[in-house]
Length: 392
Image (cartoon, rainbow, N blue to C red; front, side, top):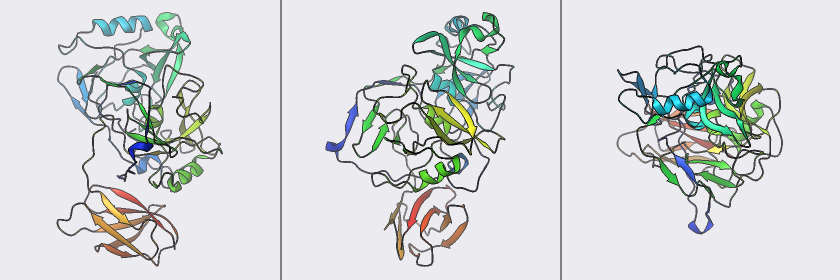
């Protein structure tokens, strides 16, 4: 797993953006995508951060070990939106009475993009004939539409009248949620570093503030993100679809994101997540209202890069940070692991994930390598990598 070296900013250069937010999850989980669909480095499969993990109870519930949220393993069946609200308010399950409808972000968090119809891990969640699941959020400006996740792995704004119980032909089911930890009120969700980057304090992710001005194909987007250097940071990547969706604000539209990102406009933004078993299609996020859907990878969409690890708890990570210098490197690469006990071995990979070197010394002669981007891995079983740039 690629670990990120965070850039230290002078306090005088940081501006907090006054948009409040409620934090109900401990961490933002990964999409669960484990298949590779390209030789180009940077797809969803190449970054395994906060892999989905659950603990099954013997009372009809499970606890998400990443988010801290508790869910019924079986949904409550098809019903109208209003009935779903009442169902959750009156639900008594496993001795708990504080069940509620999930927010769009919470509902999206349990989708697994290594599965389809349903896009859930059915080792834990009982499969049903649901096509959609209600969230607690009506569409801004139109109370007749509600945000719903779907069995294919997306999220969108749907008329309440579409479900069978309201006279429609589609199956909208209810699945309640409850928190196992208190809600945290964030007074300022976003921090503008005034260097072209913005940190979302809700997730701990740092974002490129101004997206690339030119639309590009999915493969081009992967390359662009991996080669980006911004604010002295080279650890940028194309976000997965859950990371992109985490920026969505259901209270906003046109675009559905904080105005601190004043250059995004209403566009489609690529994610690194491929549509399951569809090599030619990838998920994207549309900023008009905030839906997630997919497109052919050969079509052109826009790119907003991300850096960091999604930690909604805003806690420091403990891991083997590798201090690499100089970076970019010319003739020699110096490696200083935080853990100095014992001898470490290292492997160097090119952008095609091919191993080009293996060594056990802290000084590596890189004169024989061609210019480009590489990834250094400490061979301690933790799959922690750092980006290295060779520039002669």
